[in-house]
Length: 326
Ligand code: NAP
Image (cartoon, rainbow, N blue to C red):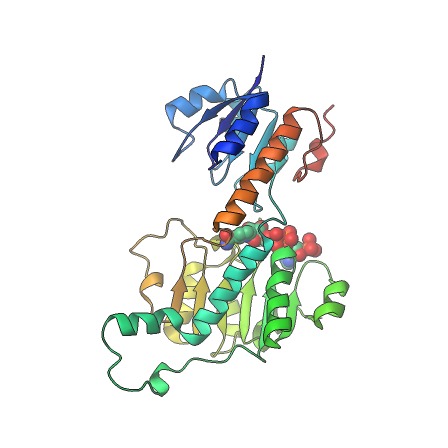
């Protein structure tokens, strides 16, 4: 009998055909919650899950006694109980590398658009306010030659810093769990304690994963340490930042502007002041959202689940401790 996969992330027809050669695949389009009754019932027979964004809980795992592997269509895995999965011998796979450059493009888009006030000034034209030559009230600040402080210096952090150093002549500082000597050589990057970096950087860009250690890593104290001309960019996860403290810092002029792709709660409520603030560029979590990259991420998930359910080590395995299975 073919093993059963529940696919709740977007896979194209070719990818579904590929999976169906080896497996029985149930597709759940626009699945909003794991409590969906049909999904809940199908879990009882599932050997594999392919998707993103669903919060996987121990209760959900209890409903899936045959589950062998999950292929997340994301690099971040903060919505999975990794230790619990490992304890149950369930493999968790993600999609690193294939989204790094696209997400770095989005990070740089936020740096540029917040610095040059691109969204605010596009609105200015739309509202018919461009009546005379623009003046100092519409000026932004330079990006080239400035200091870029990376909080997190992994794949995406390095790719953003590479754009800054090589494309815009920026000086790179980083704060990261481990030192990165190869990147120091390549980009002239310098490691700093977080507090030091916050005081020195013109742009502070967050790319650490969300974990118990990084939740609310940037709060009122950290915003107070930043320059009042600083531009803050979050391309990682909303919960790495204390959003109320961010709003307060932007309102009080403790920092100049922010570029945000991620929020504490997503989708962002219209009640949040953030998308309505002139000095905020807010995007709806589009870091990796291009046709090319989302297709590549889905393909990596297809490859991961196919290998996992066929007894081969997946290409990108988060919980290596669950491999090989006992
Ligand atoms: P990565 O290569 O694992 O990089 C993460 C970096 O953060 C690593 O260098 C790591 O240090 C460092 N780090 C981890 N915990 C830390 C801590 N407590 N303090 C300081 N540094 C810490 O991951 P990535 O591929 O760059 O992705 C990073 C995150 O971006 C993902 O986890 C995801 O949440 C987010 N993301 C967002 C989008 C989007 O659409 N906005 C898209 C993709 C990814 P070590 O090198 O020492 O381990």
